[in-house]
Structures are given as structure tokens and as C-alpha cells.
Image 1 (cartoon, protein in one colour):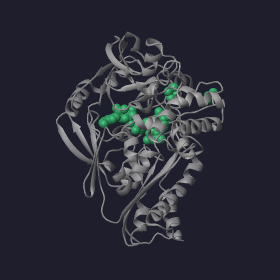
Image 2 (cartoon, chains in turn orange, cyan):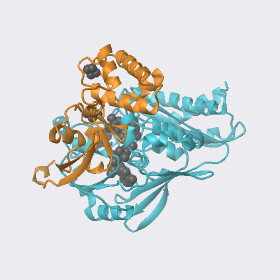
Image 3 (cartoon, helix red, strand yellow):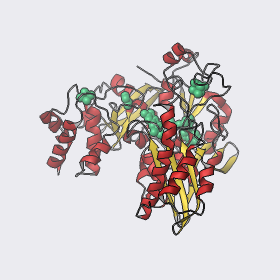
Image 4 (cartoon, protein in one colour):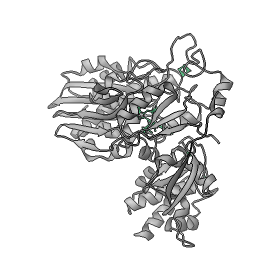
Length: 164
Length: 330
Ligand SMILES: Cc1cc2nc3c(=O)[nH]c(=O)nc-3n(C[C@H](O)[C@H](O)[C@H](O)COP(=O)(O)OP(=O)(O)OC[C@H]3O[C@@H](n4cnc5c(N)ncnc54)[C@H](O)[C@@H]3O)c2cc1C
Ligand code: SF4
Ligand code: FES
Ligand code: FES
């Protein structure tokens, strides 16, 4: 704490594969992926909550698996495929999970939604026919303070059915 | 926002190179693997460092021999928890890896990092501003322990789920230092001190874990926490036993999160030798096992309740051993 401000900032040029596009960014090495996505790449779909790994709202996919962008360093992610919620739709065409969430009202304030959509996407890619318990397990790192989860579980089941 | 402090990031290519960097830089530098323990703590300014040494080079394979299994330190908890060989032969270890934190954290957190996870305390795992307002403690920036003010030491809690299990399974870690490699039993990796909780040299890198199983051995891990996900353990029981038919030849019981190191319940281990796992025996062993646990008021929920629950998690762990055989006695 004491000497922090006096330290030099080390900046690095990184080639990050975000939503299928390789982008070169020049960033301070101590910035988290969450900060780089939101502040340097204007990808603000990824939300910041606790910033300590406890809430899951900052979830992104790394090589298809959910991880927490508030605890990831871009310098450790070169060569890995990063997917954010912006990467779920194809142009105007929403992902079936997004459609189902909209139809069933599975989002209230919507703050947890990007993270939950990505955790669900990763689950359905590995397991197209999850049981309700398997869905609960897959979402066990994503907190929602609004919905009570039932609509979220129903929306994932609806989307899973449509995607099969 | 809670931001990381400024640091330099070094990218060694081998464990030896990483160890040399750490030896040269001393306490100004720390290793980072998945960062899932380190980054929250850096954001809360619990460490003052100016350099991170990335362990991204660590291999990530699980190699299965006939009765030995070598797990590289870079293997993520998610991969360890799903590994079929680990599930079959070292059941308790896969169970422990599978109940650490939450699914996205297990995709990033490594088994090596889990063995080195910092000890925890309600007065220490707080933001800089909180600690400044409440008064700093021995573990960082202060000169008294806020939990036990008359005590000269820190009682922060060992909070790793896999270390107690690796200890119960009599595992060993491979350590690479600036001058060479050595193997150390997991049981010798920890110290009874909330601050200097690891017995390895600070510059040594954990590169792997070795687990050995003999015929007739079974293991289980039961964890207590407020919620079924995300939370650190507030008590836990790792048990591993070798059986001859129904009779326990030897066993190890190691408790999580009730001391500054994974705590072995030796009296209960002795008591169980030569016995069958019926209900009365398990109850008596669990009672004995809970005796050395002395949780303090520095983790989630009441420490009196945590103490009482140690007996329960040990009982549940032995019931799991019975289930693995296919049936519960008594
Ligand atoms: C919300 C939350 C909940 C959590 N819950 C749990 C839980 O229930 N149980 C639990 O056990 N943990 C928990 N953790 C802590 C952490 O996620 C895991 O312990 C994880 O396994 C740490 O591994 P890592 O690779 O991320 O370690 P890092 O954060 O990279 O490192 C942790 C420490 O180990 C050192 N280190 C890492 N790898 C090595 C190595 N190979 N050799 C030498 N030193 C090394 C680092 O210098 C650092 O001091 C939780 C974390 C969060 C944020
Ligand atoms: S046990 Fe005492 S010295 Fe250790 S972290 Fe907690 S308050 Fe600080
Ligand atoms: S913001 Fe990353 S887990 Fe809460
Ligand atoms: S919809 Fe508000 S947090 Fe989930």
C-alpha cells in the first residue's frame, strides 16, 4: 500500500482472442480481464460485482469453460479463446438461451444474466440434456439476487430442448 | 473498484528458473498459478509485492500408474475432480477437489495453488480500509491478534480442502528450489502458525503431487460450510483407511479448517486399528477425533457449533467409506 503509487506501470501489448476476433491491446499488466474488457475494449456486457470471485457476474468463457474475469490476468490468456456475452448472438440473431430468458422473464434487474447465460452455454455444449440438478450445479458459482432462480432453470431447460 | 496493485509480471519457462527468480527477489515477489486465492488478497492489499512470477509453464497432466498417481501442480481443480482414475482410486481426493469454491473458480484454480492457499481469518480477509478502521493485526501491519489478544501468535485458519485429503492419503509433493528438487510428505508441508503456515522454502515451487494407494484402501472427504458452493470450509474431515476384509488395518483422519494447519486426529486413528466400522465404533472414533479441534471465533458461523460439528463430519466421512463398500453397518 505504502509505495504502490510510486511504482512504474508495466504495459504490455497482447493479442487477445475475444469472441472469435484477435485484437491487439496495450494494457497495464496489472489490469484484470474484467477491467480490460470493460474499459479498454468497450465490451460492457460483462458485469462487475464483488470483484473478489464471490458472485459470478463477471463470468466469461475461456476455451469454452466459465471462469471469473475479475480474477484473470490478460497476460495469462494469450492464445486462449475468450467469449463474452456479446459473443453469444450472431448479429441480430440471439442465442436460444437469450431468447428463452426473454420469453420466460428469467432476468429481472439483469445484472447476473450475462454470467448465467455463459455458464449455461458452456453446460449445454458439454451436456445437451442436463437434469435440473446438473443445471443447479453448473450455476453454483453465479448468484442472482432477484429471481429466486426458478425462471432461470426453466429458461435453460426450454433452450436446451430447442437446441437438441 | 477494487483494483490490483501495480506489479511486474515475470514469465519463467521452468520451475528452476521460477525458483531462482523468487530466491533473488525475496518477499517482494510471489508465485501465481490460477490466481484465485492470490488476486482477491492482492486487491485487499493483504500482501505488499511488486512482482508476480507466473507459473503458467507448470504441466497439467495426471499420470496413472498401477497404484500410484502423479498429479501435476498445474492441473485445475475441475479436471482433478472429474478424473476417472482419481475418482476410483483416490475417491476422497477427487471429492475434496470438487467441493473447493465454485465451478468457475475450479476451472482456474490449480491443485498446486490449493496446497499453498493462505490461511484465513475474519479480521484479515478484509479490505485495506476495513482493516485500517478496525485496527491491523499481527498477520499484516499490526502487532496484536484481534481474536486472541493475549496470544503472541496468529491463529488464522488453514482453509485448503485438498491438503487434508492429500495428507490422509499419505501423499507427497515435489518441490523445485533454486538448487534442486526434493520430495516432501504433504504432512511435512505445513506449520502450526497462522503467518508462517508453510514449511517449504518460500522460493520452492510445488510442481506435483504423488498419491499412492494400496489394495483395499478407501477414502472420503466431507466439508462443512454455510452454503453448498463458493464458501471456504469451516470444518471438514478427510479420512483414508486400509481394510483387510471389514477390518481396518490402518487409517488417517485429517481435519480441515479447525487449526492453522491440517490437523491429524491421531488418537482416533489408533483407536480404529483392528476394528470394524459399525455404528458405535464410528461414533466413538468421531468423538475422539473432534477432541484436538479447537476452532476460534475467526471464521464463518459460531466456533462452538463448528467444534460440535467436527464429530458429525468425521462420522459422515466414515459412513461414506462404508457406502463405498456397498452398505452401512449399525
Ligand atoms: C470465493 C472464493 C472461494 C474459495 N473457496 C475455497 C474453498 O472452499 N476451498 C479452498 O481450498 N480454496 C478456496 N478458494 C481459494 C482458491 O480458489 C483455491 O484454493 C485454489 O485452488 C487456489 O489455486 P490457484 O491456482 O488459484 O492459486 P493462486 O491464487 O495462484 O496461489 C495461491 C497461493 O499459492 C502460491 N502458489 C500457487 N501455486 C504454487 C506452486 N505451484 N508452488 C508454490 N506456490 C504456489 C501462490 O504464491 C499463492 O500464495 C476460494 C477462493 C475464492 C475467491
Ligand atoms: S488470528 Fe489474529 S493475528 Fe491471525 S489473522 Fe486473525 S486476528 Fe490477525
Ligand atoms: S465480480 Fe467477479 S465474481 Fe463477483
Ligand atoms: S436478475 Fe437481478 S441479480 Fe439476477
